[in-house]
Image 1 (cartoon, rainbow, N blue to C red):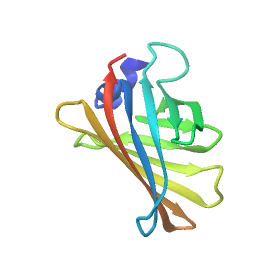
Image 2: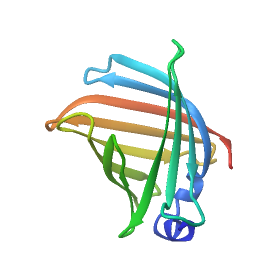
Image 3: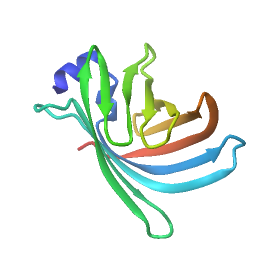
Length: 151
């Protein structure tokens, strides 16, 4: 599976490993509505049904925690997810940027587009999400992460 994923999306090799950072959720005017820390492990199994599994561990200053895994399959040159909270796909651009188009299952009429880019050294990445509900922008998410382990 890993070889097929990397053939379709070579930039994914740079995402492999564990990333730590912060997530900031902003309303459509740019006001902060939520912030938390994240540890994200990006796994590309050698075999099995999934080409990619993302393991998320979020923590908030008030002690809340949330953990879950997001397994994806490779189909038609794209990485696809169908998990309890969203479904959709990712692809790589010619400039090694990852784009995701995801439909929320837990928020009626909502979807988001995510862009992920890695800095030249490979040690930092930035992610931005633009959330829409019924076609109107209502939220943005900004993520700043640094590579802490190349698992």
